[in-house]
Picture 1 (cartoon, rainbow, N blue to C red):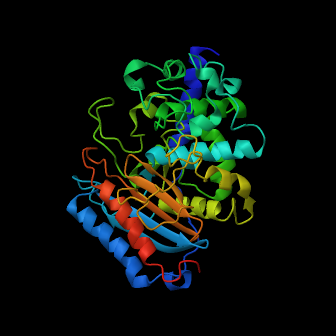
Picture 2: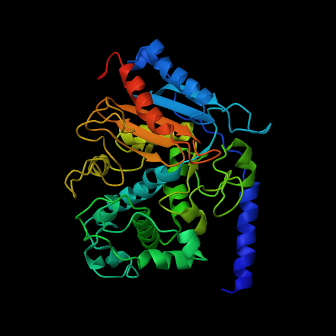
Length: 402
C-alpha cells in the first residue's frame, strides 16, 4: 500500500473520529444503599472525604462509584475538571471521562487475554515466541504468556520509547529486542514493556488492532459507549485534562493519552491509552462479579475469571494475579485496596489517579477516577486517598455478606 493511500485512509479515519457523537453512558441500575447492605450515612462519608481532598488540592476532581449485587449504591462527582481557566472550573459530572492509564492493562488487555484463553487461542504457559517470533534475545525462549501477565518475565519496567523511537514500528522493535534483566519467573518487576509485548501477541492472534478487538468484543456488547482509545474531538469537553506535558508533546493533554510511550505507539497499547467513565466501568465491574455475564451477554466464562483473578505465586511473595493485582498479605495501609477488603479481592490502579477494586466475597466494587496529574504528576496525595476511600466504603457495610 502506497504512502499516499495510507495518508488518505488515515485522513478518513480521523474524519470519522471527529464526527463521532458524545457517548451516553447508562451504567448499572441504582438502588438505595440500605437495600445493598450499606449504612447510607457512613457511605456518604466517602464522598464527603473526596470533596475535602479535592478542595485541599489532592486532585482537581473525582468520580466515585460503589456497587453491590449488580446495583449502584453510590455515584458521587466532586471537584472540577481542572485548575485554572473558565472552562476547567466546570464541576465534574458523573459522566466525566478520564484517562485510565494502567487500568488499560486490566479493562482492556487482560480482558482480551481472557477472551482468547476462553476460545483456546491463547495458552498461558506457551512461550511468547510461539505467537511473536520477533521477541528475541538471550533467555527469551523461556518467557511465557503467564510470565507477562504476572510481571515476572524478566523484562525491565520501562524504557523511554518516545525518545528512542520515531515510529510505532521502531518502538515495537526496541521493546521486542530489549534484553531480560532477570531470568523468567525469578523476580517481580511491574513492566509496561511486558504489556506492550502482550499487546502484540493479542493483535497477532486476532488479526486486528487491540482497540478494534476490544470495541467489537467487550465495550460494544457490554454497553460501554464512553470507553475507547483515541477519543474523538467532540468528546473533549467531557474529558478531564491531565498533565501539562513539558517533556514530549509540550502542551496540555486533554483527550490525548497521558503516557508518553503510549503516545509514541499511536495512542493504542495494552499498557495505557483507554479513556472511560465510572458509569461504563460499573457495567464492566458488575460483569466480572457476576461471573462474566451481564444482561443477556455472556462475555467470559466464570472459571476463566476465577483463574485470572487468583494470586499466581509465580514469584514467591508477589501479590499478582493474571493481569490483576490482589491485596498484600498481610494487609498494608499503603495499599490502594485499603485494609478491609477480603483476600479474594482483585484490582488495579492507574498513574493518572484511577483505581478499580472488586471483592467477590462481598460482591462489591469500588471505582475511583481522578486526574491527580493535573497540572503536574508531582502531586502524589492520591497515594493516601485511595486506601482511605476503600476503607470508608467497606466500613459502611452493615451486612457484609448480604
